[in-house]
Image (cartoon, rainbow, N blue to C red):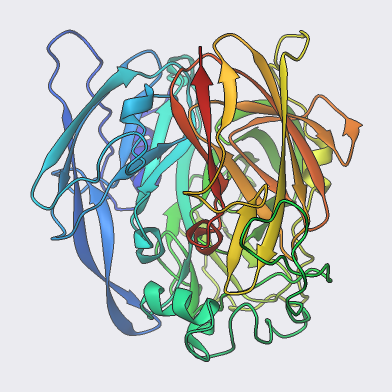
Length: 494
């Protein structure tokens, strides 16, 4: 059955969470006008207080971009915030020079200036865009980037796109200074202390400095210690820019089908998605199809995306969907409600503390379209270590001192991540989808992704085909770990 006009309008309104339809990018025909995206400042109200954050919007207020696979990504990016910035198209595979990483793919965009982007959109998926400059991402400089499958046009499914954030009223630079030891309490929004000081309650403390391990360069490594989960505390956690004291409500139809497109845009927080009374079918991760998996609770690491299909009950009602911070009871969420559904007030804390986010889901995921079988042409190992002063290293080097990982056009490449630090790290490779092919040495035909969590003391191996020449960022997507040095590059040679 085709979408009725009423349902189509409801679906597009729910997609952006702004109450207005989300126009697609131009179809990509020769000469089609580009869509202008502006990076702007905006006010936001959280917990009854005001703050100034960032946004990435079209001229009509649409947040981010909604496009169709098979077309082109034609975008004019304009900087209206009075300071340099640059936006990365997370999940897309553009030419290297259009990837949006300052000083790697292109210079930062100066205030009042613009850049033009134009490249094919080959694959559908739930993606996002965010600043790759400094700590701007912590101030909500992020937006959805949804590439729909033309084959889904006739589907009777309502889309709901929701971004999750960890929110602080503090200056992110002050948080980073606290993590580096420059100020008591700066890392915790006034509630605790940074790395190298007592960690979040219940998670132990970071270890004392020890003699450097081999290959650590000028940085002394930390001694092995028990994992801890949180090195930054937050004032609130947001879903669609709202906390649970005033959640976003998406109107749905009785007995309707809903596709949740969830984006973990948090800078330092892993979540559990809790569907509460609903039952879901996970159909894609990081915008790429997986063999469908049924469930109510799903692990959700920083920068990852989950596409979950829901079949709603046939009666009037309201159904909350929660995102619970790992190792904690704090949560955010939103509500799906029919026209006459009674919306109950939801507590900002869950009944039980959530487990740490790990690889339980990852071990069970299987790619719907895995990489074609072939021999591995090149293998790399990246070992994660840490040092005093909030220094995070890959193979003993911080970004800027790193040795690039060389690949050659056409190769099948494997990279094994080995985490010897006190925290888990969500590792993101630019420009290439990859397949998770081993966890702790056990081979599997895991999901296709662009971001995978590597737990404390864990090993994860990914594989990809080197088919997009250039110099590509590979980094931890915990913003403060990346700022602490945890980034390298994959560079094509020959």
